[in-house]
Image (cartoon, rainbow, N blue to C red; front, side, top):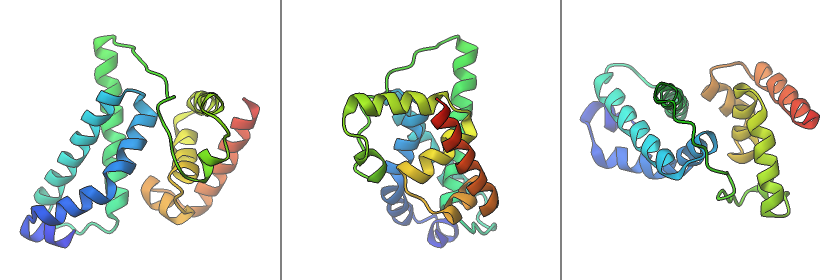
Amino acid sequence: MYRVQSRQDASAFEALYDLYVEKIYRFVYFKISNKEEAQDITSEVFLHVWQYLIREAEKSVANFRGLLYRITRNQIVDHYRRRAKQQEQTLDGLTELSYENTFINEIYNQEEAAVWFEKIKKLKQEYQDVIFLRYIEDYSIGEMASILGKGRTAIRVTIHRALKALKGL
């Protein structure tokens, strides 16, 4: 990241892009539920990150992943704002998602996964975020705290409440 900020090194940024693009796409797709829009937003995210790193070269970025997810969340909010202005309410299903990590492996088939995703999407935004980051992306409590800009205890409480709300559904 230092090379990106100080030298505007495109190859260093490309390495960061390769490292995070799939995770960011999954996060966006989980929120947007549309393949093409998720791809567009993912591209916008990395363009904004590049611009931020170049523009704010004198500022030190303590946590690149936190910056990346903050910009991603802002782009998703902007997307929904644009969508609301256009009165466009098209949502595709989440059945195309297939993850190979522990959370999804515990769900036995595609139909059950679709039911779980629909239940998760009924939760408030904060709960969706912690469930996604913890059980789909498999981030630690500390990583989540950094990404979401909260303390570890607040993250644990939010996860507990999110799971309780999910059980209620």
